[in-house]
Image (cartoon, rainbow, N blue to C red; front, side, top):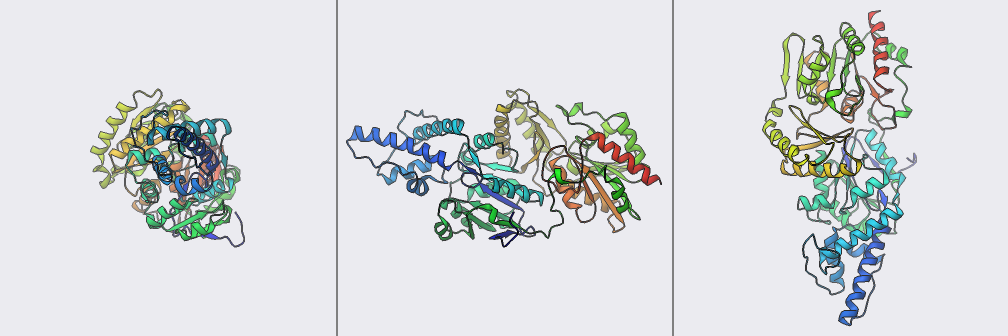
Length: 525
């Protein structure tokens, strides 16, 4: 990111989410789309001219593309261009074959042309955009991908960016939710809704005039126009708050304590254990631990994640030195059964249910109201995912996890589409994300970070003399890292490269155990 005078600075205190258009912002597929549109329209116009004895005005890959089809749903783009040539066609049916002279028939033919070109040529990625996305996520902001194209998932898969975004809303979602296309703001509003962020705290990044107009019409906090094709004046005129030539011109404020580096740049908590214990001098220590991937290795099925005897003994010894809590996405009863220790605290379902020694127990009151909705969603998922080999539905009391670790890569998109369909039928639920899992959760402002803060308050351990330490590996643990950034220590368990709000890293559960043993020795002294 440039350090000198960025064109615009995203202020973390004012922004919770950034939504990116796909074509022209994240990936350079506009050339593939334009070529596919030209092949489709020129071929159709020539056939029509021969039949109707008309003159042919070919499709212009620059002017016609930007004016009639760029940023719009496929069927609307076809209708808009044909109207410019005085041609009226029936819409037909979405299942129309490419040989049928209907809006849908031409649309399906264009899609086949585009996919063939995508497979043959691939898609270029704007690396400055990817760097910005990593930087935003490291500072605790959510990111979403928004596209009118039904090929969004295919492009993300080809480019290896599928796991980069917290949500995706594309042409299939527009059809499923009956969203009006750009310049209506519906598709952006749906993405913000899925992230649980209001428009007034969401930034839109677009390169198309229709997309900029959609951002303005949705009253989003800021609309950033990306003028890669000399469209600076047009984007500015149609409602962009700021226009840049590339996203390397966007900066992020540094006044947020949760801002962080990628995991590869973090110091090892095990190697810096002596430095960490110096920070703990004259402090009351409270330890929070995730379960899967932190205390046990990640396995194909959650019921196979058994706690080793050595790790159990280590946690028990630690609990004799300071308060210990396990914060897990698992059901409280499930993680309690696996750990089998009576002198620690358990927060299950990301903190919706918390129990501890001496009969302590609390269930999130609002979460209880969602149980019948979760029951219905579970039945629907069981039924619809039965045909997808390897898909596993895990019901927890306050959420539902759909695991895709055992699903063939080509079938993961089908699983996500089924999850999206179920969510569309149950708007009181939202989608959570983890490693190889889709999670359906109550639409409430509650997560592991808030569970940690609540537990500290309940135990009267929220004063300046207390130093909380949180160890976790999942995306859901980032909420806790951010919540504790100003007052505690976050340690991520990760061997690869990933943006995080944690301050230290451990590579795997065995390093976690070694670190905890060192901590026990220091606490005893």
